[in-house]
Length: 271
Ligand code: 2HA
Ligand code: ZN
Image (cartoon, rainbow, N blue to C red; front, side):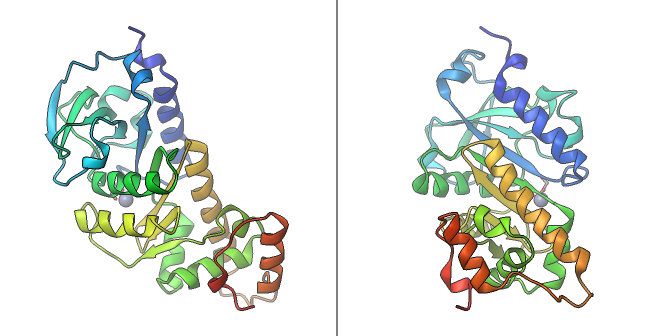
């Protein structure tokens, strides 16, 4: 059995959480990541027959029975993951009943997975029905994205247009736009269901006055989506309250989308 601390997925969880903390996106215990792992790969590091304990999830994830995830822990700080991966992360498998998680590694202080597990697993189910290679769901609290939700209506078209209009890359990186949820109580099955519903149409979902969700096949893809939204929100807010003399017009947005051959959401433009 190989040493799990040398596993590429573990090292990437450490590197990513540290990076996100440094960017200020994950203050205190803010943010969470789940990564659907390859079972055979996990088997190189862990005895898959050894369940440390079981933890009820409180919702049905039948579509993920037998699937193994590495998930950040509830109440844990991204800044501490690298120094103590086993205390801050856990590797869980969805049990045969679909509503229990089997702990295979981690959460060494008796802890458990993020309170946002419903949003994560429900989003995994939806995204994999659209893209079977999706593996990552990432949630964080990036500064400018949050601030943007104070000053732009909590509306998909309105927020997407702001992000598209101020940075040329935006429509190329997220041509489908961003989904937006109104303010809701977090950590509940309800916000999980609402997030997953948005994930049918979007790879990015903004939670008003809270943060953002991104997804992808790889950590880079999920991170890159969020990073691009955050950059565009920053560009907008750096100039906010000053007369906006120059934005990318709808015709120009369409031209960029055509040049990069992306299928953008046509109803978000006035053409
Ligand atoms: O895990 O970010 O949304 C802490 C949070 C809750
Ligand atoms: Zn959060």
